[in-house]
Length: 184
Image (cartoon, rainbow, N blue to C red):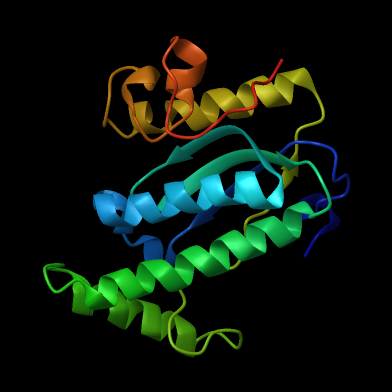
């Protein structure tokens, strides 16, 4: 991996994105979105994850994150990805009402076969390319990019109308689903 895509300063904020293998639209279902939200909240409470911005789309998530405390950013992201991968795949396996169940699990199985690190299923793509946000311009640009994702996708007309992002926190007086550490 290039030096450009490494966490070099644990005390900075980073923009990261990770996607479901084959860009499968898993997060079109509430059940799977809830696993992501609950896991982010757990990482905030128990692992020192700071979330300054976020947006969960149907097949990927954008985060602007940092950390406080002892856990490093790479460990928090690794644990988050591992936990959500296992629990979402289990939820899909046991959800007999999921019309795409066999199709999704077959794709996750196929991805695991192509990977030396995964045994049964591979849910997330491996890379997440952390980009250090070391200027106010970069912070503002990435936060705008994160919040504008559902607008560009045609899901909502206004950023703050999308429930699965921090735009509501930044654009209104309403609190969103995740506690946000505001960028100043």
